[in-house]
Image 1 (cartoon, rainbow, N blue to C red):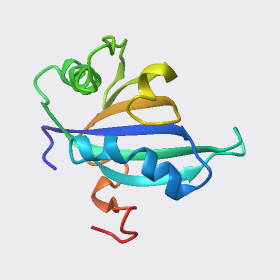
Image 2: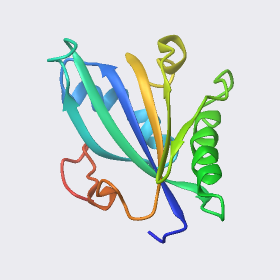
Image 3: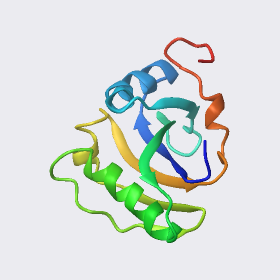
Image 4: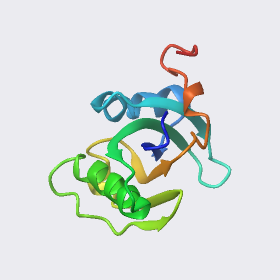
Length: 143
């Protein structure tokens, strides 16, 4: 990853009985742009039957002299790419990251069955969460 590259982290909070079901629910979203699964965690201690699946993918946006604009643009571009009807989100930005939360279950559940909300983040610079160590959870082994 060069320092001009941006990486997207997408966290999907989904209603699921187990990891397998959570990953299956996110399969279409994962396959859309070649995203990879970083992690899937049971968060049912906060909400019964709740799983958080974290995906990563490279952004087509590159940083420019205005890093904040590139980060916000990466988040908005990703959300617009989810389909018609998704509103242009308000994006919070504090370099090296920008983010938005999609919390309209009726819209996002069309992409991910049982999804409650989605956090979309864009990061610049070094890989903040070790996305290079993402693993294909469907195969259960590192890529």
